[in-house]
Amino acid sequence: MSLLSAIKSPEDLKRLRRDQLPELAQEIRGRLIECCSITGGHIGASLGVVELSIALLYEFDSPADKIVWDVGHQAYAWKLLTGRNEPFPTLRQRDGISGFLKRTESEHDQFGAGHAGTAMSAALGMATARDLKGEQHKVIAVVGDGALTCGLSYEGMNNAGHSERDIILIVNDNGMSISPNVGAMPKMLGRIVADPRTNKLRERIKGMTFALGGVFGEGLVEFARNVEESVKNLFSPGMLFEELGFRYFGPIDGHDLPKLCDTLRFVGGMEGPRLIHVITQKGKGFSFAESNQEKWHGLAAYDPLTGEARKKSSGPPTWTQVFGAGLTALGAEHPELVAITAAMPSGTGTSVFQEKYPERFFDVGIAEGHAVTFAGGLATQGIRPVCAIYSTFLQRAYDNVIHDVAVQRLPVIFAMDRAGLVGEDGQTHMGLYDIAYMLAVPGMTVTAPKDGDELIGLLRTALAHNGPFSTRYPRDKAPAEPRPASEIPAVPYGTWEQLRRGKDVAILAAGTMVLPAVQAAALLAEDGVDCAVVNCRFLKPIDSVMLEALTQQHRTLVTVEEGTIVNGFGAYLAETLQTTHPEVRVVALGVPDRLIEQAPRAEQLDAYGLTAAGIARRITALQHEESLEAR
Image 1 (cartoon, rainbow, N blue to C red):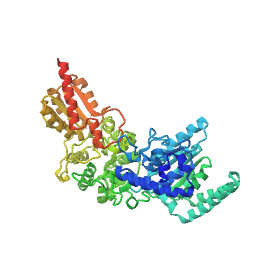
Image 2: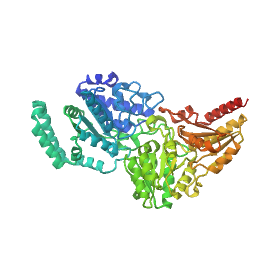
Image 3: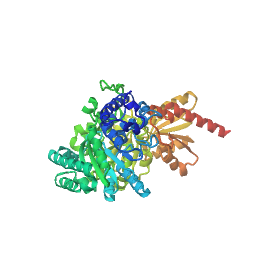
Image 4: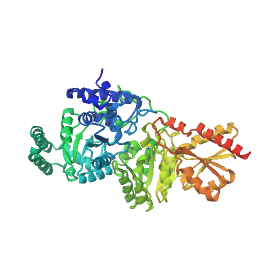
């Protein structure tokens, strides 16, 4: 029987001898590589924290001690060790194990985390609650995988260091977000790691502190601690953490289990804010993931022997690829165009632009709010910034969108990838809210292309528009290969496109729902229902001329959008018509008001009726209702 298969809870882990832990780490890596080769997932970061996960559960008492992980895709090994080894092959599948931390999944998942930077603030909240309630447990925040490029981490550290509460911050330093980390903080961490003199002296002093603490106890080691503090202040770039109020320990080899366990045990016995700097290798133990850390951050199913994808990509390019190539082509025509992303060059397709125009490309790290305000500053000086950020991540910068861009009517273009249903990444990554939140921003142009040609055309329109502009597209293949960007004209501003005429019902479709709407109309025609289909590529402003014509011809308008129906395009259209055409019925089809669990994207679209057959079924039901009402 393997060591891992015998572990049903952290209590089982604690029964192992220390010399068995490296063998367990090897088994965990094998399990992760095997399971993720079938399900896909964020394997790179999790491979890097296998030893850290083991050591945390070996030296602390979860769930009594609160261990809070930042960026939940670090936590696959954590899941294996906290009772989820057996169901782990269901990772990211419908009704299976979440790809991120989830409080409803395990008592050991102290705080749900899909976005970066949350651990420090959440952990401080838990430590404060502990003190208010007079409890005694430990609280540990594990921050890493790029989260130290995120401003929220520093807000939490600033507050925690000032509070002097008993809290441990572990910095998992692997030098990566998805792509290599950027900015001054990663450089500082690199200097700490690279300075052999400082590290050697620090280790000698810390060794003395450990030894004295073990022999004489806490009360007789103050001298050694004072010497240690002096060394840090004189020689260590890590003094920044000290100035923030954290006692600094490190850097520690994150793959040296005995040293990790010793450090956690010793530091855990102290009080006050303290920080352990742990160095890990993203993708550790899997050669493919070690050699290409950006690619292996997260990916679909693969062959574990060759590293090749199980499903070869074929057919049209992805929307992301269309955007990246189109933006790069437009960059040649518009020297004032720049691209901004938040730690996602490859994920947003802007890496193509980066290669072509490195001086006009800006990766700001996991700092979406900064990205938006930075873009606003550029726009005041005649530069045309394109902010390429996932829909779900742009939510973090909503105040910046309003306060720093919309209020000043600055011409910033928001390209929102992963809009709509995103499949296996689940609740935290659904891009379902951008239509609703962008429609609410005064002066914001809100668009959604039906295909790759229209995406490039809308980018052209955006570059000619003097105000904030947004467009959205999904995590999926584009419907077809687009034409060369040079052959694609701008889309006339504020216009819709009527693709089919009909006398019974008008289907007003947005973005990815346009082609399914056309197919639904063909299905309905076979049953004698004659539907008009309109491509509502501009959700705001509405094409008032075409809308007026539609209201003269139809008493039922059916909107279809791949987003929440609460405050979405259908609701916006209904509000628009409420006073001018109260006799017109607007029926909104979209995603209902609920959190969407992980499942393949195609299954999600089918489940919520966002397919040709689903749209046709709903309109057939509406026609039946109306015929009954007319009797």
